[in-house]
Amino acid sequence: MDSTNRPTHLADLVEAAAARQAGHPALIDAASDATLTWGELDAAVSAEARRLAGAGVAAGDRVVIRCARGPALTVAVLGALRAGAVAVPVGPGDVGAVVAHCTPRLLVDDEASPAEVEVVGPPDLTDRGAPLAAVGGGEDVALLLYTSEARAVCLSHRALLANRAQAAALRPAPVTPVDRVLLAQPLFHAYGLAAGLFQVCWAGATAVLPGPGRPDAEELADTVARHRVSGLAGVPSTYRALLDLPPERLRTALAGLRLCTCGGVPLPRPWAAAFREATGHRIVEGYGLTEAGPVVTSTPIDGVTVPGSVGRPLPGIELRLVDRDGRPMTQQPAALAAAADPASSAGEPSAGEQEVAGVPEPAVAGADAVDSSAPEPAVTGSGATGTHPEAGAPGTGAIEVRTTASRVATDVLAVAERGVAEFRAVAERAAVEVRAAAERAATEVRAAVRTGDPVGDMIDDAQDVEGPADPASDAGLIALRGPNLFSGYWPGPTGGPGADGWFVTSDMGLLDGSGALHLVDRSSDLVVVSGFTVYPHEVERVLGELPAVAEAAVVGVPDERTGQVVRAVVVRVAGAELDTDAVRAHCRTRLARFKVPAQVVFVDELPRTVAGRLARHLLVDRPPRA
Image 1: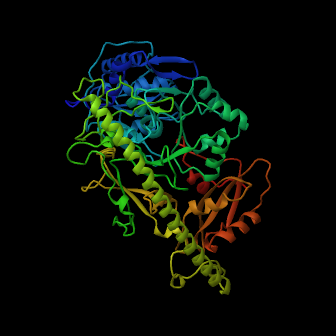
Image 2 (image 1 turned 180 degrees about the vertical axis):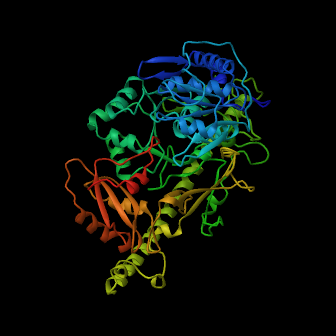
Image 3 (image 1 turned 60 degrees about the horizontal axis):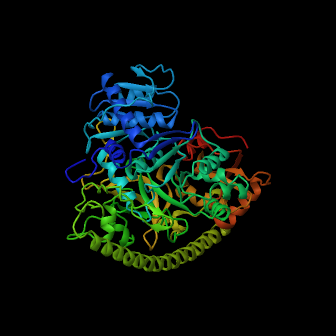
């Protein structure tokens, strides 16, 4: 903690939670039902820090951590951080490449490893150590997280804590001290570790950790019901698996949930609709990436969602679209060109700013109740600090009344603004759809009258194209700026935000009139057919309109004549009949001809990474059999 009582080190979050409520459950191991309280977790983290220091780990050393069980990985990561080391959590499998790349001082491993580095076993969760001050913090690198592109992202304490404060500023808060959050994603990934576990630490809530391996739908439902889970953090495949349960079983098991969140990749609309119909719960979506700590946007937790969007940027994060040369695109909603920093206003902070500065207030029995035991750490760099009602500050009653009144006024204004924004967004989307439909029709007419070269029959020549064929024509690369951004890639670190603070991602998106972000695709996933760009997400959305399609992925595969052609990889709904001709016939009614899949392959399931992302390269390099 610094002089303003704001956290500067991730391990301080555990110490602070233990000081507030030592007996409150911090971790529940769903496999064994074993529980660690915040006091016990804090002591176990100190014991692990001493163990690692005794093994020769010094400040700045990398410690690779491979533990199958969530509680052990949690203590190992937090212990390494408290010792001043850089934690490098990895998943199951060969760690040789990671060890060779980041040259760690130590490997914490729960299985025999051939890696050429000193190996120690997982931490003893029953060990308790005396209080130990954390080493380092701030701009020091806390985590090295390896992405699917095999790059090691350097995330500082500053970046990770800033993103926790940004997420905590959402209202209602995504995690409150009274919540029990089931972290269904691996803790060696940014989503599970930072957005999940560290957010629980920020709030002093309770994390429920599944056993080793990927839990099936029955296990998830049973864990939610048995441990009275109020928050579920998953990826699209998590919710798709739950939909396989009988509706009555699913609704009963998930009846106690307050919040369902989804990240990793966009959630298909039919899945979201089916989940809401079966359970009554709306899924809150977001967009993020490891380099951003990781959360960037969120749909409203308690409000109207723009269909198909992943929401607006979190407070303090700026988002804009740029072209391939990094130049800002001209047609961007003003609301997104410079997202407001909740602590940027001069003078006395507003009610909203006071809330941003603090740990979210827990919702009890549907009311906005304040947990008076929880002091409110502030956003790094914020000029506003939160004083808790029971901290003995003068004028507390007046402050509470004024804050409550301001919050009510702010909420009313926000509802009105959302209504206007929603109307504008619907009107603009309708205009875009009309324009896109007209332009697709024109493209089809020109292609239909063309004769001769079959490639010419499939697409228009460049000089014949009069305008954009679909909304994705206005898509740009997503660029970000904020205190939550990473320091660069290991080693170096290199490749981080530019001198102006902006980081250009490889993701492409659209901004609607309300300022909500709509993901298009990763730039590396685009398919180029005879020079014309095909966005896989657009084709996948059309494929998803077929009732017999459970899931679909689109990739580009090499072709001698056109450079690439579109390949659709489809998972049928169980028991449904669907063939290539039916798929292509449907696509021809909804897409320009060059976007219609030239190849259709049927599979039992799509390959995914541990974070739930589609492993598209496997569909190109090793095509499944039809």
